[in-house]
Image 1 (cartoon, rainbow, N blue to C red):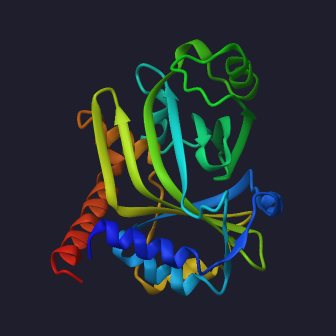
Image 2: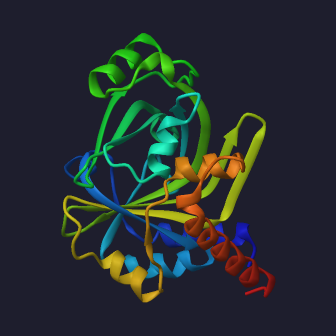
Length: 265
């Protein structure tokens, strides 16, 4: 089955879910949360969605269930934020501007992973304009919220993808599934259309139908971020010792997909 046919099948599965709206999702924003990531082969996603359907609702925005996201990440010239993640530091930050295409909303966002392993997200609404250098409002927000200096940051990586957002019917849990990942840095563009980055978000990590489904399919949790994956994919000279095992796992997933596609399944 080709990637296009798989995406059609995934879209069909998405429309079988009970829907939830943005307004209804207000109670599960989870701006202060625990989270865990998984890498899923694209060819496995239809089955995962089918098994998840009894337990989750799926976000629908303007008659879309696979919603487009455009994100510009910021870092220092020497990639201080990337290296903080690469070295496994806690109390680290990600800084980004994100355009939620389907809802016509854009935010300047800061994610802070604290020393207790919790993810804290803060953001301010902004016009839908991508800027390499932070404007005054973004700079002021950054420096009030973090120890970072705005004049040391610039936009260095675009990450575009389509996202499905699932919300647990009975508990405070969200699940995002990002597919058709495209990374753009300078003149380099890398596309990962054979895999899905899933992230489970809870107030406290605990029982979860989707984690049980992932375990059933022998999918294991990881911690690689889209930003770090994009940096090391578009710049192979970038140090990524801590991510080598995860990068090999990613290649294994892609190879599994290639075998699946080549067999015409």
